[in-house]
Length: 170
Image 1 (tube, rainbow, N blue to C red):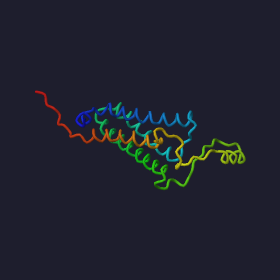
Image 2 (cartoon, rainbow, N blue to C red):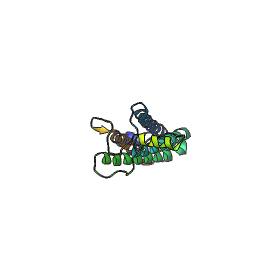
Image 3 (tube, one colour):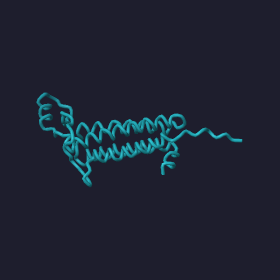
Image 4 (spheres, rainbow, N blue to C red):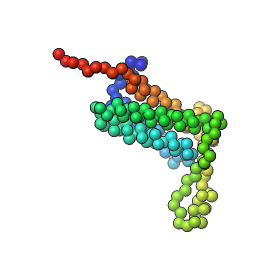
């Protein structure tokens, strides 16, 4: 199995990393806008590395050649970063350690100070230590670190493959 992973071409892997991160981002946005689950600050932090992986993966997939392997390494780093943030968020949700001291609310532009005050007081507060949704006893933060960590592991296996000398044709 490892041999097969180590021989995967880097250009399709860049595309797959970008597609996976794009799907995770679209899922998070769907949960936010259609599922009514506003994100906490840690949820938002987990989105940034995914956005970077989408951009870098597309560059690696379209650039190909010498760009593919460095882009693959950067995609792996982005996936490991969001997985780490997911582990931290999951630990906060389970009460294993302290989270952020700030909560998040969503507000739009206000026409006056009174309107801004009304928005701030009426905005929903989203806590990082509460699990608003779970499936099979796993929160969205859990799913993020599992999926992102598995994808990063695949990329690490591919990147750790021994380099092969170019074949000379006779």
